[in-house]
Length: 154
Image 1 (spheres, rainbow, N blue to C red):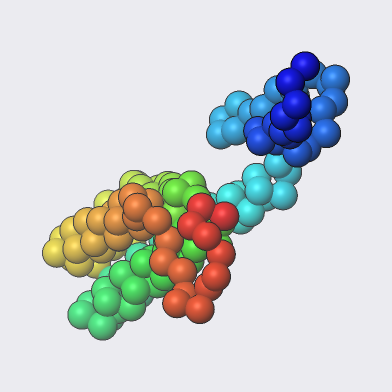
Image 2: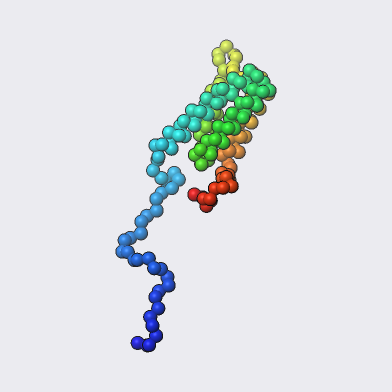
């Protein structure tokens, strides 16, 4: 051999193991269901139904102020669900509960009366809450405080 000293390999200093590589954990819909997360989404859907019923009664009783209060409550629940879970489904679960409750109340009774007061309040309540639900569900990413030192995506 030559008189030169042998150099170490520069690629990696980690010890080699003979273990085979592990398969990656499934993500998204292929992942194992988490019972706690399912319970949170079910709770958000029930809260959405409650906010839908309360919003229906408030917007019909106190038209201008009640409509604004109902829309703010819906927006708060949808955005709160998105932030609490960190997923789009967190905003969609209460929106589904809200939608089911409102559509159920739209059915009316055999006598011909129904819960909603006037047509303009009904239209503004349904379109406004639906628009807020879509906006909350399609946020590109959640905002983090300025002092948060975590890297994005964690």
